[in-house]
Length: 326
Image 1 (cartoon, rainbow, N blue to C red):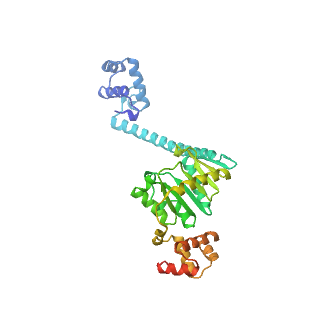
Image 2 (tube, rainbow, N blue to C red):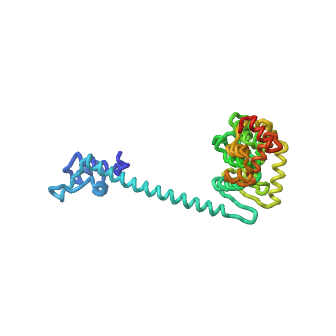
Image 3 (spheres, one colour):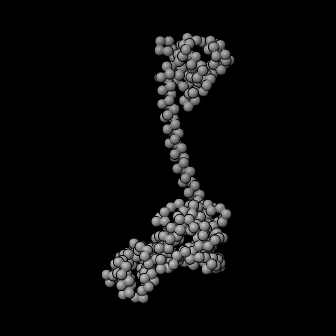
């Protein structure tokens, strides 16, 4: 009953007996509880450590059991303070363990040899892939054998959105099993409306990402998704990855027609580029005002021209005006 306070069953029995029989000797308590005398002495020593058995004020040679309301409340407070101290130490130890684990992950991540970079663990792989995506210049292609249950975040929070807004050419091949569900199809449709090309196929061998047709990212272990990833820069490996991607891309089914994008809303970057172009800004001014590279500004303009089937800045402005975009 008082175990959380550090009072075991045998010690509690002696304490309870001393409360009922205040003037009893250890021998009498042993007879009352039918326990060996040495065990009674051990329990009384424990009660002294817990300040539940103390000398009387009038005669220090005589001991008495402290009233439960006083003794147990004080003991509870001591235990609470001890637990709070241990909890604080535990939190500090947990924080130190997290730092150590992160340092260990970074050590594993740093294993780079020539054209191969090994990323241990899902967290390390995800961070590095996002970094490579942010540095991409032209394209980001992927074979993505994900199921609808793997999509846990809304499409609006996808890390692909900043890439599409920068005008990066994105091609994604999903499993047909993902796109037959409402959530999966809505996710694919959202990516398509932002400018990504989306196809589906019955099967995919593994996850594969290709950045700028120069970097191939593959699973460290295709059977264990959380194992991490391997980044290849070797021209030979990248060429094989491109051949595999092209093979599945050419056989995959296109989910949406290109013209479906006409009615899609503009991305923030696209809307601002159109506004600046309508005001007579040149590509250099657009890039400077938006804080993007000249290449990105020109790529966004080219994508808009393709989307509206415009062959000149004038036609682009007319087509955009007809749709109420400027």
